Length: 58
Image (tube, rainbow, N blue to C red; front, side, top):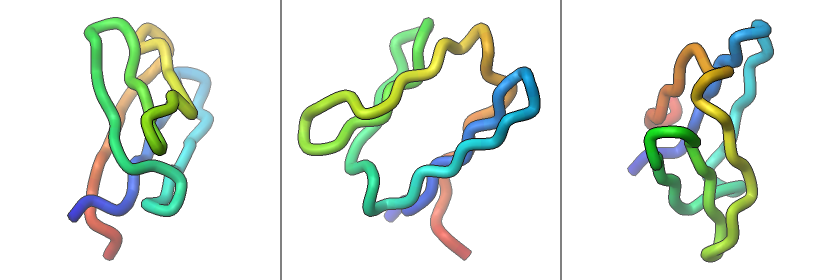
């Protein structure tokens, strides 16, 4: 089960979402969207994103 989402923005900012903060995500070709309990709790314009890593916590 995936537990962490790490997003690196074009300006160098790094954002980390833990499994307690999200339960789903989706990608619609323009945005990467973080979802919790059916609500969008974060969305990132992919024009400003360098990388997105969804992984198990190590």
